[in-house]
Length: 220
Image 1: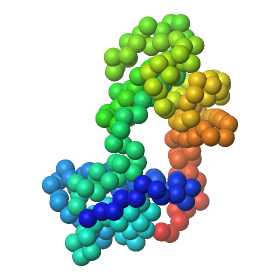
Image 2: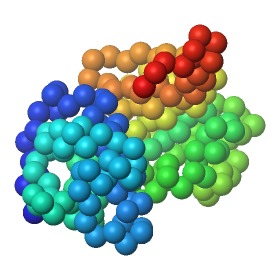
Image 3: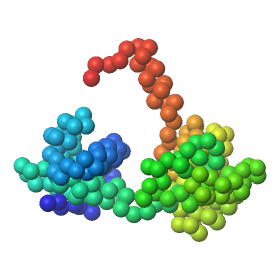
Image 4: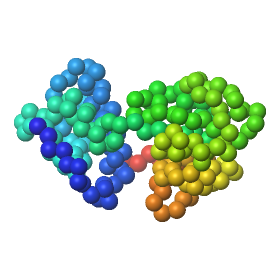
């Protein structure tokens, strides 16, 4: 049984909670693939090194899942998590900056699954325009971004340019109407209020690990 709420306050949900929902979804998908039908929060935590109390607290933001004393139906829980995360619908992406990273993303199954569809690969380099990418798209002129976004119902912009070009591309994405941007460039970019930008810099995590290797790993 589940009472999934659709009127929760998004301002009360932290980014950490949302990140954990993604982790829970991956765990539940693995259980479903193994043929597991039901799972309790304790069992879910034990299998995947999670915190059962945190699982229940995170789920409580969105509704009442499962049956007391029985646990969660794995298939239903997967469906609810996908709905909460907005993965029960298609989201269209455009990537600007067609280098090795962009090509890898275009060929990465989890990045181009049923919930996310890359509908444009753009670059400003004339030598790259017209190239065919691994996912069958032609590289198009980045100058067409403002035309492509509304024409192809793009919702998410992905920046994979070198650092010096990242802010200019971000500004162009905002001007084209995009309100969600994923930035892989090794620099922080800024947008106006109402635009959500997430930056991914693997170097930051490597430097964090280097810090602990140098000064000692903290006790858990």
